[in-house]
Length: 337
Image (tube, rainbow, N blue to C red):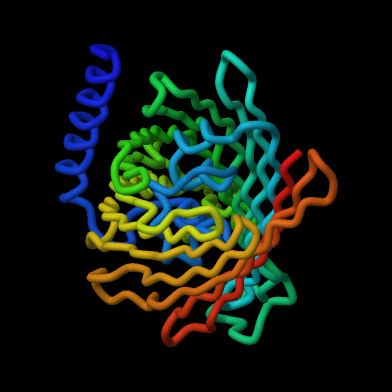
């Protein structure tokens, strides 16, 4: 018990330090925005209020401590066509090792279609094309330290690239989840995401030619030194409870408070209704009180279908309103085996 209290106090203290430091940063000053793209139609349908709900493989993104709830093996695949021809793919797998904890791995890929290279001299295009891409590869470990308290960690490799340039970084996530046996189980959770190195673009596009010598007849190559940018550090605190829970029905309500280092604080809220843990209806609201937000209402449905005794298929869909941008539809396939 003393160990558990010490860990909780340590995480809260570190979280407070990160939160205070984050106040000095402003919008548009962080790299690797792919780290902020939400994952999983179940969580998105609930408005992104998933920190304290996390009990499946999508918790690897929301709260790494939640994967401790995985009892066997899970795999997850998610493809999303975002606004402005941006595509996002996410895949994960996790397994529970009895007596050791849960281990998992995930990969996230962001890509765009080819775009023409334009210059001042050739505004219609030079005939060349470029694109933007990002990839995140990570591993997860979590376990229950007591019957009701779990802790989890992610370690991530991050790479961004655009045309002939790229940047690399490393980050960790830390999460906790505590269950209290009241109100059909009240859950309290906190997580810190993307604490890591700064990222700096490097590559041949920073090489510039400068005239030198009498009359400028000679050219000297020089490399421009670009700035280094922090990762989008994010602190989440969540509450969740099953306000209705009987043999056939469950109604879960959840609330998340989020503090990012590159924007204003906001709140996510959501509901999930389950019938026989087979059919699911979800609704939520994303980014409440966030300044200049284009996000808002979310909704989703899900079906869990058992193929054979040990294999269950999970199909989930979510809708999210992005205001002046296109509405986004999320689909995922999950397998429990």
